[in-house]
Every structure is written in structure tokens, then in C-alpha cells.
Amino acid sequence: MVLFSRSFVRKRMISLATTASVAATSFALAEVPKGTDHVRGAMPIQYVADQPAHSREKPFLSENAAAMNKMMADMTIKPSGDVDRDFVAMMVPHHQGAVDMAKAELKYGHNEQLRRLAREIVAKQQQEIMVMRDAVSDKRSSPAQSPEQPRAESSPQSDSTDGSVARDGMKMSR
Image (tube, rainbow, N blue to C red; front, side, top):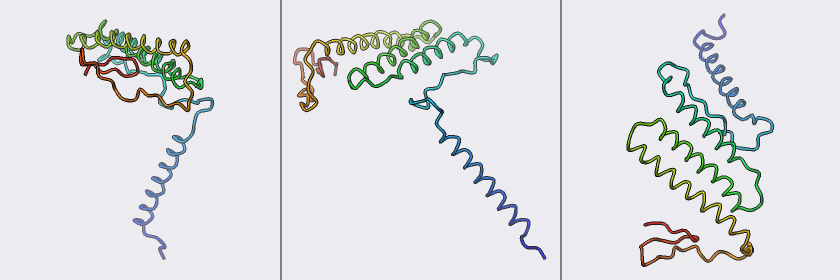
């Protein structure tokens, strides 16, 4: 007397193996490494530059990976209790990372359109870094605004002379 057919057993074994695989994967993904309070994705960037097809690209990939790793490490901050300072503390390394990666493109890249874009990125990001740092340093010297007082500068103000829009003291082209 046969209790279960081979087909029935085979289907149940496949189902059991699939369930076990999904469960193991779920547990592995759900486990948080000890001592990490930051984003899981902030892992060191690594490229497969050891392959012969990519060997001439290795210096660019190395510089780009170094810029990404530095940026990710520098963006990991301990909150200070001041949203503005924390924003700047994270955004400055983010912008500096873009500058460093754009400089690597300028050093190794050949596409003139991308090189022009990289030059623009360097100029704009460096300017924005200065604006952010100045805004935080200005905040030290200006009286602190109490949390109960909402800012009155929520709507853009138009400047009729050049068609730009002022937001929080920064002029932006339309």
C-alpha cells in the first residue's frame, strides 16, 4: 500500500525547499549588524576592476570609489538637535562627493559633453557648499528663531529686474 505518490512527495519537497529558502533569506536580510545606526546601503563601493576588460579604467574606478566611500562616511552624522546644521553636515559631503567624482571624469573622461557637465557640476556644487556653510555661520550670529514662530518666507519673491526668484536669501533663475 502506497500512502503518497511520488508526484505528491516531489511537489511537497519543492514547496518545503522554497519555503525554507525564503525564510532563510528573510532572516538574513532582517538581521541588523551590531553597532550600526545608519543606513544599510552605506557600504563601501567596490567595482570589478580586476577584469582585463576594465583594466584601463581602474584609476578612474578607484578614484570614484574613494570619493563615494568618503562621501558616505562623511554623511553619517550624529544628530545635533539643530535641523539646519544637520542638513548642512550631510549635504556638504554629498556635494563634495559630486565635486570629487566630476573631477575624476575631467581627469579620465573623453566625452566633451560629459566633461562640460562635469565642469558645471564642480562650479555649482562648490558654490552651493559655500552658500550652505555661510547660512549656518550666519545662523550663529543671528538671533535664534523660536520653534513656535513659523517662517514667513515660504512663498517665493519675484525680483522684477532679472526675472529670478528669491528663496531663503538665495536667487535662483527661472
